[in-house]
Image (tube, rainbow, N blue to C red; front, side, top):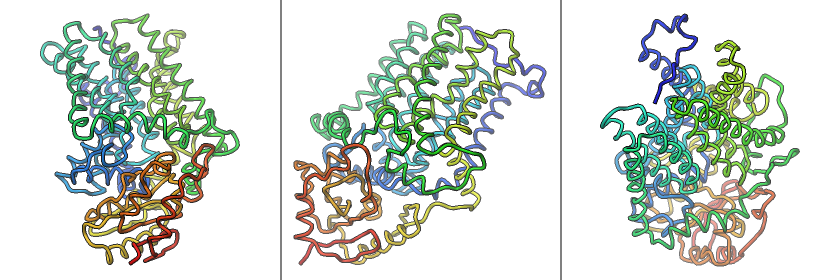
Length: 558
């Protein structure tokens, strides 16, 4: 492969006096500062009560011998849970350990994009990494969600593949194997990313020398073979149902949002709740619903631009390092569109545009250079870097940039947004002080009354609408058994007639129920009330021990 100079306009700049390694270090330092400014705030920031709650509870279930899909509902691959279980085994089950894994996932995406885009110059590569971090850090903070892990692994697979095209000898072979391993690992986290990982990997495969292609394929297949022990432990039928049937066919009716989003209203319930925290924005901005609507359309537009730029490079410079960098990742990015289409709220749009918006920088740089070759390179470069910044400042400021600024301010002790609920050294942060106080009262009461080995079920006050749950309580009470497979609660799964939830409640010792999420309404089937059987069991068999605000602790009546 031929290499492309990365210092086109830097020869006369002060940076030209630095060695390539020093310039790399400077770029890494800039990205590190952008990340470090948020970390104190992020480690004490509110976590998503159900999502981060189950990413704390699920791995501990594995350490207790319970298997995902077989013993508890899990809608993705087992990779992220096994990774966290291993971390918890070594470092203990703590919020800090879980969030450190989440941080490493964000670092993998940020620096993966940086190193992948280096053929376009360090300035562009640094800007790409920075824009990606600012967008992706907002939806769930440092929660070690499977999607973020799969993104990082998929992108780092392309980084290793690109390096394998340039390396000689055994080093190149090892990098090809690493690329295949990382691609397979991404699918262990999120099997629904198979199209994105598949397209990116196949495009990268054909960039490799012929003798290294089998190495990459074999490494990927061997990694995917780790599904075999999972199938043995959890059962093939339960695993297939948990990863494909339940999330694709049973869950969608209660989670899908209109595409495109509504212009005059925010469709997603959690996004409406998020608008209650406003830390101010110094510039005029559109209504939040208008921002989400425009954001939705910018996602496919940005993807089209990136794929077109990659295709143009492939035609005009088929052997260049820039083609190797942009063409496979453009296909990877385009295949992420399904996330934006199935539920176009701010979270899922950020998960996708956190890759597509930063990649607009090298894409626009490439296209302008091809169609306006006489323009100054510095003008093209900085104009391309400015494009996603303009989008973030003028079109969707309420979400990525405002959230990033909020996190930085919290790192310096301003407008803190995390109120602890703690028990025996385990802590979880909620965003509302009253909710946190009430949850602490319930926690203290259950600590006083419960005995180790008893069973606990956490859910909504009305069990016929299981739209969400405060699953962090399972993490706070490791000595109690989870009395249900529905640690994560979703509409169309836990609340159906055949879910078995009513039978589980009949056997439970303790219930924590809440009305925190009672106002959940979305333009989908989540508004429906389904099976009343769990509510009848609760009314018949359980008595209130403690009531605190929107929470109740219930014990089996004696």
